[in-house]
Image 1 (cartoon, rainbow, N blue to C red):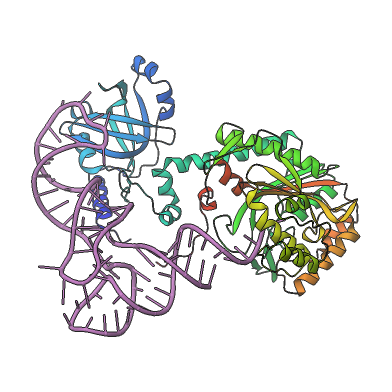
Image 2 (image 1 turned 30 degrees about the vertical axis):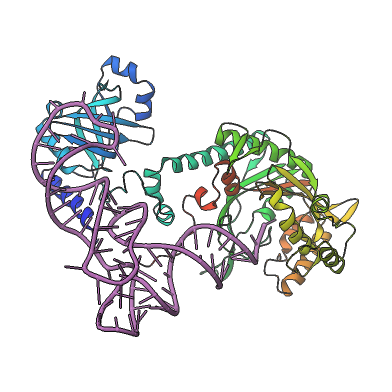
Amino acid sequence: MELNDLQAQRAAKLERLRTAGIDPFPTRATPTHRVGEVLAHFDDLAASAISLTLAGRIVGARRVMGKIAFAHIEDGSGMLQLWISRADLGETWFERFRDELDTFDIIQASGTLRRTKTGEPSLFVTAITLLAKAINPPPEKWAGLQDVEERQRQRYLDLIVNHEVRETFRARARAITAMRRVLDAQGFLEVETPVLQPIYGGAAARPFTTFHNTLGQSLYLRIATELYLKRLIVGGFPGVYEIGKNFRNEGVDRSHNPEFTMMECYLAYADYNAMMSLVEELMREMAIAATGAPRACYQGQEIDFGRPWARIAMADAIAERTGIDIREVVTLGALNEAIAEAGLKLERKPTWGKQVDELFSEYVQPFLVQPTFIIDYPVELSPLAKRKPDQPNFTERFEAFAVGMELGNAFTELNDPFDQEQRFLEQGRDFAAGDEEAHQMDRDFLNALMYGMPPTGGLGMGIDRIMMVLADRPNIREVILFPHMRKREE
RNA sequence: GGGCCGGUAGCUCAGCGGCAGAGCACCUGACUUUUAAUCAGAGGGUCGUGGGUUCGAUCCCCACCCGGCUCACCA
């Protein structure tokens, strides 16, 4: 290892400790309490005058002033001051603390609790043990570690130094736990389906491709869990869900990471209306778990997850914003004419459905700040969703939006194998025409549908994007512990 | 992929043709109640990488690498 000056100084201290017969990386720690626990009952524990042992990382500056010293240790549950005197600790270890221990070293300290004259809860130390020497020095004392790239490449350091980052990921864990609790309580069974798939499907996206050496077979990293989960509904489970990673070979920006966490769930004998109620409950409970209340404050805007969401048909939403009624303007040519007449500037898309999607994305989606369901999508955009009985060109599908961002997607699942086959064939023509995101034909999935799948409601929710809203982080990388980073040359 | 901005000490940043700078951190010394401790002193650099222009380049030019924002892409 090549060490810079500061690292070399710390390594030299480590060697001096070794020479003095001290193991700088002993096998075991023996704390009797956690710092958070001590802080919660400080005055009682102090009054009892018992001796206790705490373990943690030295954080902040050590203040050594002659025959007395101050430091703080932090163990993930809280931070406590150490009061260290030459008289109590003894000359050898006092000098060791002064000369050989550094900020970021992990130590164990024993003593009794008392407040200093300024009232700060402190451990008056009678013994110190080194648990792990830190070779890397801390970043700047006040400005801290700010460089976004370094924070994400060295997330461990980011977490040590920036406690609000820890809180973001704790909130994420609480929200996911709440999501499981809601789903479990409603009788969904948590399952796991393949990540490596011979045929990818369930979403419109380009996949990552890999190769199984001994089978001599190309495999895809899943872009969705949908088709496997629906096979399980065919198999007779009344409700299933999976929380896991999906992988999409697309651009990287502040709302897209190549691997991201999705929850998908399916409920037999239900439809997309049931899924809307489920989304409302999930988001309310996740918000409470993450923020303490059924709302979030995103970039200064209060987002309310405590009430039923607005429900607007896509056609109505578009008509309201642009004056164009896609139920009347049913061909690509007519749609483009209407767009030109309305004076809207839009990129040209190859099909009516994609042009509708473009119109929606540009003129409606950015305005969906409060939680909103956009319902009833064109069939062409929804190859796995069931048609509306009275409007066969539209499907029983909704997407859930907040802060202008799509958080979820759901529909009444298509269970007619013949219709599904036609949709796959349609997608195949799109693929042949150059649409790299078109679905693949999945014969085995059709075979499953041919055994009969009950009417089913299905839902997918992007956990990362939900956490962006709940944790008020406008960049997806801030809610993913180790976001994708370009390889750095050594 | 395009546009704009950035990469200088461990960290946060200034400098922008003429000996490489500051604060914090670190090191040495003083100090028995600190809270960004204080005081005195010292050390620390491949100025992202490679070319070019120039008497001389961290600075100007070109290419590349990495990142941020943004547009495109992406349900």
